[in-house]
Image (cartoon, rainbow, N blue to C red; front, side, top):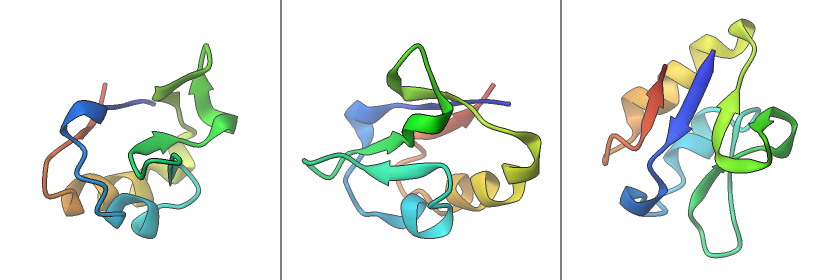
Length: 72
């Protein structure tokens, strides 16, 4: 599944990385990004995530106060 993050809207709350650390992490400035293993073409805002992580990705989406994370 393709996961994207609208990083400009991220408020660095850390909820997504707390809910799904297998997929999300914070960069040095605290903005959420996709972990390197799942990035598409090295883009920290776009990932190709295995379907078996869907539940934790959905938990992160549901918890994000700024609705920065989308599934395509």
